[in-house]
Each structure stands twice: as structure tokens, then as C-alpha cells.
Length: 507
Image (cartoon, rainbow, N blue to C red; front, side, top):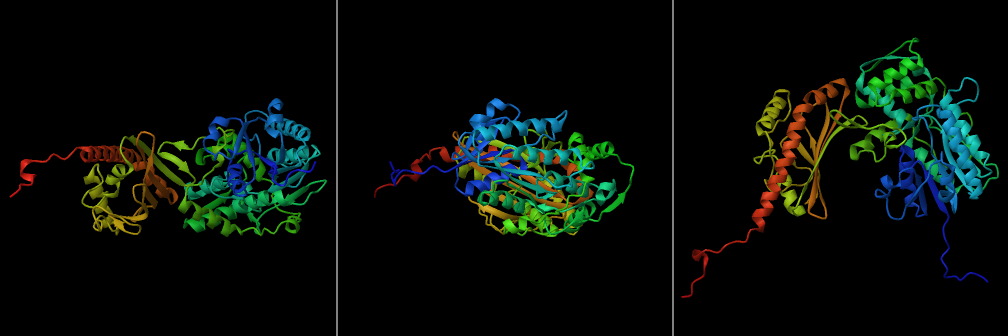
């Protein structure tokens, strides 16, 4: 019997692994926009389920536990394999091999039509690093599943949150003079994260191919790691000197990276071993299958920096549960070059009452705590040629985007919800102060966020030397904003009592 025209046709399911990782988290956003059924396979579903839209299915699955894979792959048409064990202790090559073999067998049993995999560039041979060798071996194992496998091989990914990019950035931001090992002279072919995601997404639309494809992808520019560092420094307005020496072994280099970057030494060593291998595109067949024309290296870095000006990266390499890394450090939470001081309080008041003290901040009202310190900071700013606190504010009760509040400028203003101030004082970097009011079941939550983007070593010295004082100021400022909001709400809730003098008298 023919199916009824009104019978809904079920769409093929897309399985995404590595959702908590840097690439997977960003790819998920793209796939959601396509409006196709998405299933995320993770080892901690409860961690992810409340963060995603209800339309995204979240299931438990672990590639190292074969018994968990059949249910996760049931009904799947295309699977993204974005799993690696680089942060794991022990033999990561063996763990990657074991996970890929399990996934390949389960995909074959489930009759998965296509596997899309992200690996690494590098010429095969005995000189290839264990990390890159493992990446390419995983691709071969997935192809052995007899499922059509699309393998992308990429070099450094340029984007806020990318492991390689954060490593390069941390070195440039923190060290005016860098004693660098020989790998700074190794050539790579960086690709912007947006272009990488476009390849991964467009692979869904490739026509069927019995043998699959291996695509080498990269931007138009070939550059050494040293040249990438210098381009980043140029765009940040930093002067850096690179001194290359041949005596730093991979182990010493990894320990050095662990001291000056957010990369653990065990991950750093695997990265350093890979950096000795050129990662250049030799096969340009991707140009025949995709209309994507990747950005240049300067364009990729510019876009990454501009993206951070508007929002902090939504996913990061250190978000991956497998990485075992945290971003919270003494002095705040590290997001790329930025340091954040984040504080929250809950109040049993309305959003309007909670936002009242926030919209009146600065000017004659002051900053709710240690106003004499704010005044002193203003005088110091004047002495340094800045604007100080002499501008005040236009209106003590109302604000609008673009207005000034002492040495701040209102960057974004949403009544009863959001106030973001951008600093215009003299400071070795850029700074923002943001207040956001969010309704809860019992009232509201006020989220106070101080963001500092230090420029060079001087900027970091400035932030960390003043952080103990900043911590006291930010803590007490938010506490007093909360007390003021509660007091204002209590006054508004008190009934007005009419006195005899206020009564009307008849003639």
C-alpha cells in the first residue's frame, strides 16, 4: 500500500560526538540552524541536557565502552566523529585506536550511511609525530567500517578557544621576549574556525561516494609558528622578540608551555611533538567539491579578535570533559586573553526593583562601596592624562547607550535587564563592567561581571597586582546593590498612610 500523502516523512538523524569540545560545540549551533534531527552522544548527559534546546536529543555513549554505542547509533544516517584522547593519561594512541574500532563496528551494524571525521595534516612516514599519526590512523579505521567516510585533515585552527591558537596567543601576550625551540620555524597552513565549520557542515550535502574522501583543507597562507605569533602581536599592538634555540627538547618545551600558557604539560608535549611536522595542504581536491574560499591568516586573526569584542567564546577547548582542564585561576576566570571577575546574588524582588540601583550607578550616586577609592582612581587617571570622574552622568535616574558615566561609556543598555559599561580611563588594556538581571522562580538573580583584556605583560601585572583590592570592591559593591534594591522594594511595598491633614473636607 502506498503511504498517505499526509504521513510525515521522518528525517534522517545526525549524530554528533565531541559536543562538549571546541569544534563540536560550535558545529552543533550550525546543525541546529539546518532544522534537522540531532542526537548528541556524550559521557555525561546530565551535564549537557539542560544547556541545549529541547529539540536536541542527548544520549549516553562512550566509544571506549562498545555496549553503549548500538543504542546511540540506532537510526543514524550521518555521524560526526570528533573524539580524541590527547588529554588522557597513558597510551593515547592505543585509546584512540580502541575507540575508533568500537565506533566503526557499531556504525557498520547500525548501517550508518556516512561518517564525517576531523583529523590532522602531515605527510605520512616515520617522522610523523605520534599525535598526527594517531589522527590519520583513526581515519583509516573509520574507513574500514565500510560506511562512507569523509575525512578532513586540517592544520592550526584560528579562533578564540582553539587549543593551538590559545597556545600561540598566551605566549605572545605574556612574554615580551620568547626563547623558542626550533618548531617556531615549522610551516603550517592555518584555517579560520568559521571556514573549518563550513567544510564540516557542507560535507552533509556531498553526493554519495562508495570510497569516501580524504580532504586536506587550510587557508590560503602558509606561515611558520613564529610568523603567526608576529601577526598576532602586530594586530594587538605588541612588540615581541623571538629567539630560537635548538636545545629545548619536547619535554622541556612542554614544561615551559605549562608554565606560561593554559596548556597542561602532558598535552603540551604532544602538541610540541606535532609542531615539528609541517602541516601543509598538498592535495587541493577540496576546491573541486566545495565552494568555500577560506580567509587569510590576518583575516582569521582579525575575525577572532573582533568576535571577542562582542561576546566571550561560547565553547572552548578547555570545556571538553576529557581535557581535565579548568579555566578558573587566581585572579578570575581566564577566557583567551581576557580575565573575568564573575559574581552573583539572588534577591526576592522584581526585576525593576533589582535594576533600580544599577541604572543609578556613578555620578553623584557613586559606586556603592569605597567611593573615596573611586575618587582617588579618578584623580590618578587625570594625572595620567585621562578623563577622570569629571564627566559624571547626564541624568541621575535614566541611561541610554552611548552616554557617559564618569570614566565609563554605556555600551549596551536594556531597561530592567542589562547594563554594560566600557572603560575609557587610562589602563593597559580594555575593561568592561556589566550587570545583568535575570528573573528566577523566587525573584531575580543579579550577575555582576568585570572583564579585563590586558595588553602585554604590563596589563597582566596591572590586573593581578590590583586583584585583591578589586575583589573586595566588586564583592561589596554587589552586596550593597542588593541591599539597596531590597530596601527600595520594601519601601515601595509599604502602604501609604493618610493623615488627617491629607483628608478632603467638605465645605
